[in-house]
Length: 150
Image 1 (cartoon, rainbow, N blue to C red):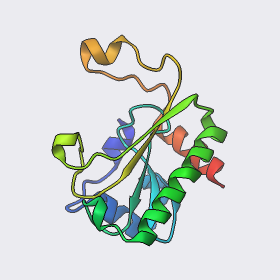
Image 2 (image 1 turned 135 degrees about the vertical axis):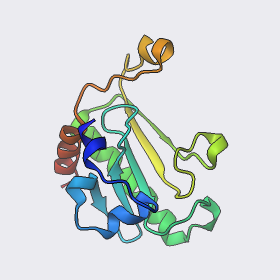
Image 3 (image 1 turned 60 degrees about the vertical axis):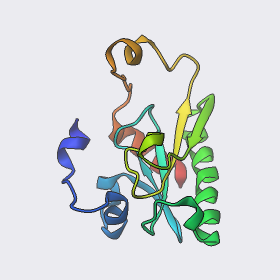
Image 4 (image 1 turned 90 degrees about the vertical axis):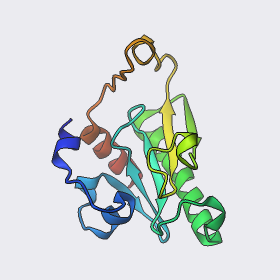
């Protein structure tokens, strides 16, 4: 809740606005590439849930430039190494939701989700009460991942 309450809402796309600002720690930007950046998900499915997004505002995967695809997927691979060092997950979910009907909460700006997974990380809470318990504060996860990226 601290993260949610301290972030000012933007009038535009936060995946466009956050990289323009020099407040990476506040916005939990882990790394920046030439065509994309890595950011902690503000509403993580699991601790360490990251997103890799292009700087350019596009919702259509087929309209990505070849250099954007290469940079994004290079950062996905680097994020996996970072998560392994920082959190030692047993597996990962990597995915892209294209369009509202696919489950995209932000369907205007393409992004790749990287969710670290551990045996037993899903329990009865999401099933019975539509609640997910995340065992680590987002700020601590950000610090661990930022340090592991270096």
